[in-house]
Image (cartoon, rainbow, N blue to C red; front, side, top):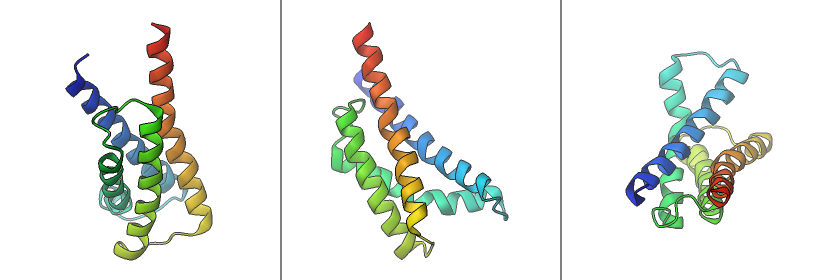
Length: 122
């Protein structure tokens, strides 16, 4: 698989992980309003933070390595919460931070462990 394709796949999986996080959260809280508009409002700070995480990790160099995922996760969680609170004027209760941290850790880092495990098996 080409490096460019691997980077695109990794970025796509990370974006899907954030969108899934938002979709599950909105569904579990039975939030109203226009589903698409409200989902974009909730996802925006985390998608921006995800881009910052990719820059901080220089993820395009080793996009599927778990340590790259750890950097992406830390930056995405921290910057996402800061953006959510100060720029998007939304809540950042401790329980939300914990749940967001666990979910995004599992989905931003977890798939990289699976990728590495599969690569070592073949």
